[in-house]
Image 1 (cartoon, rainbow over the protein chains, first blue to last red):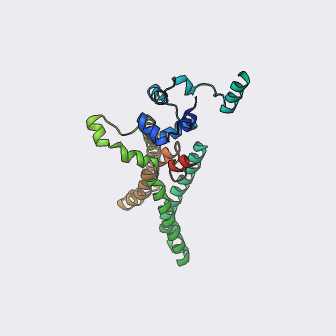
Image 2 (cartoon, one colour):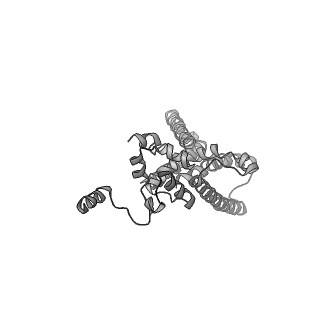
Image 3 (cartoon, chains in turn red, purple):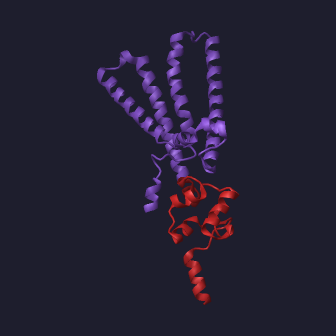
Length: 79
Length: 166
């Protein structure tokens, strides 16, 4: 399971502690999620997605996410 | 990476535990053959092992979970302070600890029964007291070691605040 939690946190300037408090888990659990050492329950995954205001499939995926650099290059080439 | 750290830490913990038991039992068995300097060195080593073990024990996430678990409140109200990852970890560790206890006790009881039957040992109060202390070390460290196998302790892992700043 892959996720973009760290990326979304950095983008929104949200600390692990703030995210943890918002979704009701220990801050260490956010670290475990970001490293892929723990797979969240459906409830926790949806809470995290709701916190960032994005669909859950934009936060979690069975396949690796495209890197930000590649995505930006692709957008630039398309425009 | 964190799993590797956890395994290294568990191995270090097991070695510390074995050293502790060894340092405790060895001087009693062979005390006459040890010089004063050797005995003093052994005492210092034993003290270091106890300090290291105690530090590992009390900085372990297991104690963090135990501290926040509030067992009495959970039993009375069903409310827990732990999140889903910590609950899964606690359940896994307690299950593994139970299994380890069962296996170790079965082996120990079987070995003791065999030894008594073969008249290798005579069971008396002194022997029970002598065996109880090393066993109590195992009892104390076993839950922590089983958990440390899965999750690195705060002793080795990077604190969450440092990761935030990095």
